[in-house]
Image (cartoon, rainbow, N blue to C red; front, side):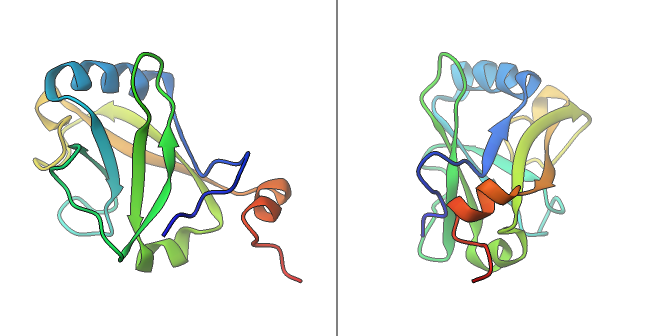
Length: 132
């Protein structure tokens, strides 16, 4: 399932997270994110080399992160969790600290996290979420 809409985005990335993603891509190749649903590392965004984590019919494609110098980095979330988060915009950021051993940033002494905000009225309309 694709939760995108032309001209609107559900996902973004901070400059600091983008810088780390460039370094990680140089080491691991193309990357992708899956927003964890609470297992292992709470609700952290998990970053994997493309192909290491398989998405399927139970996942929603939220969009792609635009990072200068890299191919778009796809972001997914389980459909079940998306029902709770569909009214939010997610920004992937990075902080010092150790996250999950499953996510590629863990050995760097950093961890990705989500900063969220409610979608504004224009975004709600673009995603077909305004009440009729």
